Structure formats: C-alpha cells, structure tokens
Amino acid sequence: MSARLPSWAWVTGLTAGAVAVVAVLAVRADQGPRPEPTAARPSVSASASAEPKPKDTEPAPPAAPAGSGTGRRIVYSLTQHRVWLIDASDAVHQSFTVWPGTIAPDPGRYKVGTRTETTTGSDGVPIEHVVFFANKDGVDIAFSNALDGSSPPPAEGRRTGGIRIGKAPGDALWAFATAETPVRVVD
Image (cartoon, rainbow, N blue to C red):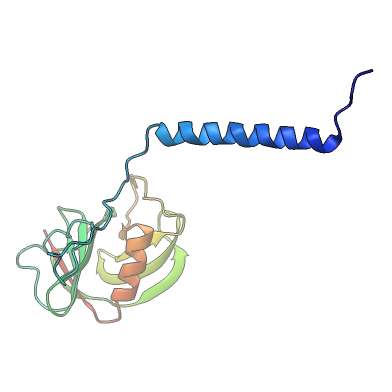
C-alpha cells in the first residue's frame, strides 16, 4: 500500500515551489534592462547654490510688434495672425495665434466694448467669450472661441468679423479683456 501525504505537506510543497519561482523571476528582472528616467533626478552637492534652478518651461512668447503702444493692452497683428496680452509694465502676459474672419479691422487703436458670454457666430458655430472691439462696413469684429474648441472653416462668400482663438487662450483673453481695455491692431 502506498503512503499518502497529508494535505498540509502538499500545501507546504506548493507554496515553497511558488516562492522559489517568484524569487528566480525577481532576480532575472533585477538583471534586465531598466528604463531611462525622463527627467533628471535632483542631486545634492556641497556646491549647490541657494537659488532654485529653473524648470523646463515653455518658450517665451514672441515680442510684441514694434509700435504697438505701451501699457496694458491687447495687440492684434493682421499679418502674423497673432494676439498678445500685455500687462501694465509692458511685459507680454500671453501670446497665441488666431484665425481671422473675412473682414479685418483697419490698423489703429480701439477699446473693448461689449462682451458676450455665449452666442452663435455668424458662421453658425456656437461660440463663447466674445470680446467686441471694432465695426467695419457694418460687421462687428470680435475675438471669440468655439465651444467645441474647433477652428473655423474658410468662410467663402460670407462676411465674418470673428477672430477665432483656441479654448485656453479664449479663457485667458476673456479674463484679461475687461471693458475699455485698449486694443491695438497692427499690420
């Protein structure tokens, strides 16, 4: 007759075997290739200065066009299709590209007039953060962003004065462009 092993012996044997397999796999994994870190780890040294090192940041926004005025203002370049938000110290707060409408304002000085939280643009797209600042040939000209974040398609045959901007820049411009904020349009 064969001797039967008690169940505790089987469980102990299987557990010991599983632990051995996990240990072997752990040793093999430890000897394998390791991913490179994506950012440098901070190091401590005796020569470290008390001044913090700059982090990787976005590139500085392009300088505002020459002759675009002074003080707190919004600058819109017709040829660069770009807007600058400039603070009272003449520092560029933010800059971003835009998609102009088919009717462009003439170069000159304007001020933010009315503001509308949400509406439908002349192209039929729901828009928000509409900042009106000019009127040309009966067409209101304003900055706005599409609620769905899209850029406008070409408006062939339509007279549109909307200067469309992205969602995040639209939020920034809405916060910056209070009533009477100067708007400077340059070539």
